[in-house]
Image 1 (spheres, helix red, strand yellow):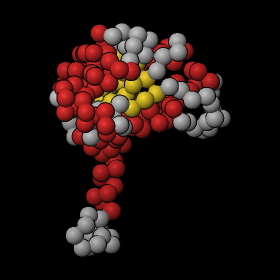
Image 2 (cartoon, rainbow, N blue to C red; image 1 turned 180 degrees about the horizontal axis):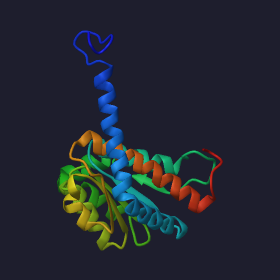
Image 3 (spheres, one colour; image 1 turned 90 degrees about the horizontal axis):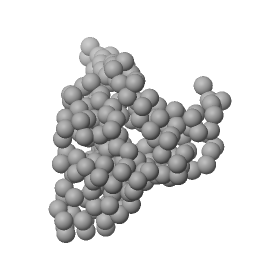
Length: 205
């Protein structure tokens, strides 16, 4: 076994190192290409929270999980004790999603929830690795019409979503897994920047 101890039928350490290195390269490239957009997104979110607004995050599948991750870091805590920040993921209530999907169609699940919970002074953070998910695009359209700040996290060149949002953070990759891994890294950077702006620098390294 040339990979040094791999079990039968599974990849060995060399393949594991290659996958992790690929992830690291994409995240590093995101920092090089999207740092300005990340800074702008953080500044817009700080403005929303300072003004008493809330964050609404949404996406499909793994991107729904990323939306929930971001909301939980803000509503709970990131790496320090500080007041809770008003952040909601629109993907967590199965009754909402199935009722709206059944009555209005899957493409309206996020736009309808933004109608219910979003208003001027709030922020909508939309996740789509392709940038072309119809329900995410509809959510951003409704958010903009209602006066929300719109921020997109996407990949594959940005798709239609990058042009639709006020600020677009585009991961320079085409593979869904690598894009989502970088989205989580970006979310953590956003949380750190928001916390520092609102509550001062942390003692954490």
